[in-house]
Length: 125
Image (cartoon, rainbow, N blue to C red):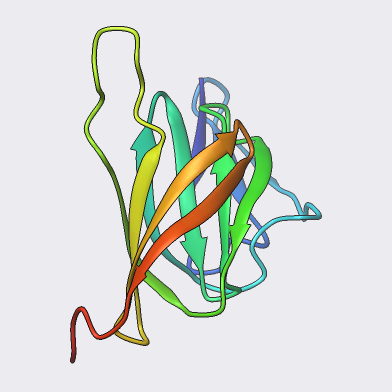
């Protein structure tokens, strides 16, 4: 079994094969270039936010599936709306940003999200 170790910088992930205790360090393209600030699971996939202002989608195997959104603020938190039923996975999530805004997104395709609403000044501090 493989274990993906999240480090302070996501540009150089470390994959540890727990069966053989083998350590692989890989530099991959099209991943976060700055510190990861938040992550959340939704429907068996992981979504990460970073100081590079990108929101990326990952498979359970640690493969990057796409850059679903790039925004104009630093994200501090991401949360998905609850699932809507047995076979309906939520396509709506919210992010909180350092500019004080709260932003709501919806997935338009499996790898693209659209910002639907921005609430400026939703929080301070």
